[in-house]
Amino acid sequence: MEKTEVLLKNPVRHNRPLLDCLNGFAGDKIPFWFMRQAGRYLPEYRAIRQKEKNFIQLCLNPDLASEITLQPIRRFDMDGAILFSDILIVPHVLGQRVDFIESLGPRLEPIRSLQDLQRLNLDRLADGFNPIYQTVKQTCEGLANSKTMIGFCGGIWTVASYMIEGQSSKNYETIKRLCYLDSPFITALFTILIEASYHYLCGQIKAGCQVIQIFESWAGQMDDHNFKNYILKPTEILINRLKSSHPEIPIIWFPKNASESYLHSGLKLNIQAIGLDSTVNQATSRQLQKDYVVQGYLDPIYLLIDAKTIESATRRIIEPLRLDSKNNSRYIFNLGHGILPNSPVENVEFLVNLLKKL
Ligand code: 1CP
Image 1 (cartoon, rainbow, N blue to C red):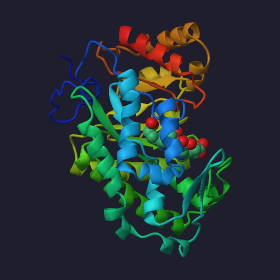
Image 2 (cartoon, protein in one colour; image 1 turned 60 degrees about the horizontal axis):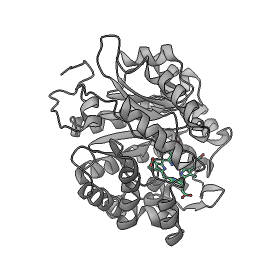
Image 3 (spheres, rainbow, N blue to C red; image 1 turned 90 degrees about the vertical axis):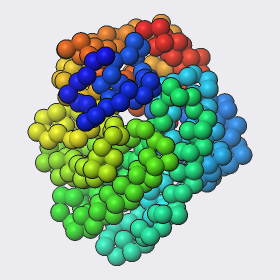
Image 4 (cartoon, protein in one colour; image 1 turned 120 degrees about the horizontal axis):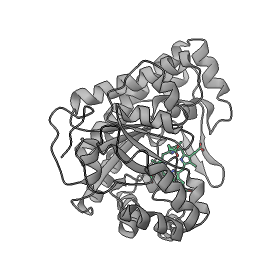
């Protein structure tokens, strides 16, 4: 049994390989799960989606959402189940209008001024998130003892970018302008989002989540100065609050396309693991592994190709990471981003069988 310095204070072995790895206990297999492991590539997901066409309503339906969370586990037996929900549930519950439009993605009524912030209301959180907590409870009831229940929220910057831009953005013009001008509106919006995300994560933990992942999907957008001020700082506040109330819960932070900026920032977040995207270079991933468990980072495009190509790419990623420089197991396999909807199920199955053998 190996212990490492990223350990939480008094870690306990739970015989859940994913959770144990995050707590510094070695196992004989590489734990794995996939971002967007529940979703449109699965026929059983598409069948449920036919019944509930409104994506937000789907996320707020505990029977359907817990069923969807469990679908990939039943089929592939991953080590972690990630709550089926979305990062944009937070603005929805705060009172912003959010619609998911088929083939277009999310559309939000933009919030861009202090006055617009009056449309948001923190009092709605207690009731608004309840169906999601119920989903967590129901999912945990259906999970084997060896599995780890993963809760999540979006990073403050990433969620704010959708709230301000109103949709997926090409160049983040509006939010960047506001940040570069040090707008008091940004400070006020971030304060609300930190508060809402903190309460949301605490509720997920109370309902049964054992690990939290923070998805900072649009982290790779800023220069060093702004990365520090507008991405790292709000993340640090959220993480420190969560750590002071829930020191035992490991946190995985996924700063997409920004692990190098993080490495060179001089700041260290109180996290146990860092999620790596597909562009990270091997030297960076090895360097980060000195301080954290690393998770990642097969490019999901490989799953669109064939078994032979998947196998060689997977082995290439795993080999340098499966043991760190001190021979400890500090590695969780994942993709570098979410599974794509057109991934053939048999390719996912091939990857899973390969991972179970390695
Ligand atoms: O059925 C459908 O058409 C909906 C597709 C879908 C799904 C399955 C969306 C819309 N969200 C989700 C689920 C989801 N989203 C999960 C569930 C758990 C899992 O299996 O992993 C999680 C964790 C998310 C998180 C999420 N939503 C992120 C962060 C991770 C990432 O992919 O970078 C982001 C950026 C979103 C926004 C979002 N949700 C959905 C869409 C189409 C988008 C926009 C993506 C973009 O801007 O490009």
